Length: 203
Image 1 (tube, rainbow, N blue to C red):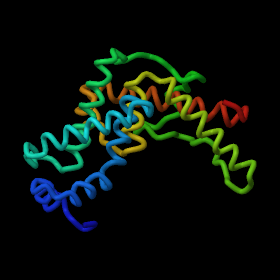
Image 2 (image 1 turned 135 degrees about the vertical axis):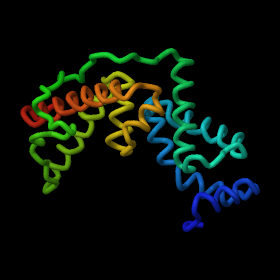
Image 3 (image 1 turned 90 degrees about the vertical axis):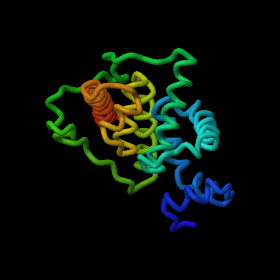
Image 4 (image 1 turned 90 degrees about the horizontal axis):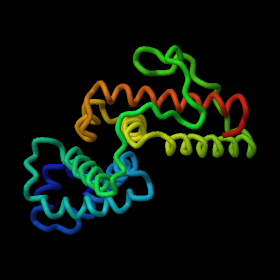
């Protein structure tokens, strides 16, 4: 089934083909979990994905095909995640919260959002350097956890999943200008953590 396109896969799903459903899960589970993590965090992500699959099964026959199957699954996941946040009253408005090391100045970035001068590279030439990479990854995860939920969501969806900004706006129900501000602030905080680690070797 690896070469099935979405149209044929959908037809099999609507016929109740269990193998097709297992293939659907294996093909898109990772993307759905990534979206859930971006919106609700890793603790609740698995529950959100499980609820999303239940919603998919219930509403599969209403999928009109106006978007790709993947886009529809991601939208279902995002909506499920947002509903979960509302129930827990954990939604965070647009704010100025920085990471644990503050943020760096706008002059560090080009107009397209990329770093003007990236931090020095870390090389995996020895166990000590591999350990440093693991410590840096933990520092970055700590920084992500310290951001507001909207900042973290926009950053993860854009940088880890490659979701376009307009699609992020639709998934999170925010304006394009807000998405740009959130992404910019989150990037500044991440850069500050990288710079702090490069100078001190500590989180």
